[in-house]
Image (cartoon, rainbow, N blue to C red; front, side, top):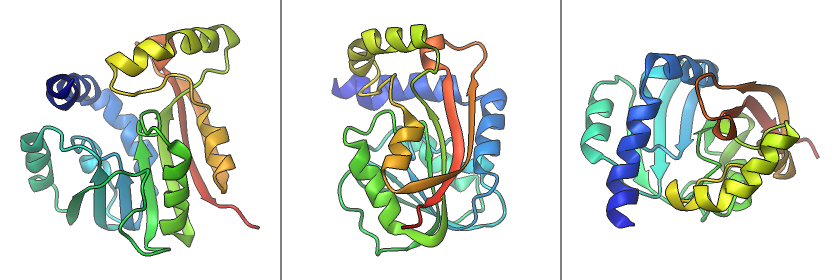
Length: 208
């Protein structure tokens, strides 16, 4: 699985998700990012062109070192200060409490094994007045499609390197101590229905 998961699958994802059309979704998801930003699940750096001017610096983490040549070129093409760390998001992050103004995940929560632990770390490193921006695919509200997501999820986890089809993203975020400020639910066009159900929104730390 090493060659497939580290080279072939990232190439397929990079090809499929690096388009002007998909860039519009990224730009919308990131439009309110500001200050010191932590991106979890940096991948091959496809978000880099879409960060707005209000971002002062970006710390980007990923558990894998994927397509390093492409990542290097994308970092060189941006004026944004970027620091990349190879870190597993479901383990304690090497940052102080309340370090970041914004935390970002895009198409990331689906493939973190212990997603609750990762969301707990997001909560810990986010400033009390900070924001968590997410753009994720997950469980459909359509019961028929959701049943197919459940049936096919074991196969998806193998062929897509741990990606889950059926995670209820909004519920997971709420259960991890966040309050949803905004939530957009929509279906991506020209995409398999089991993969196309999107959760895009903004969350803040829940008030106790």
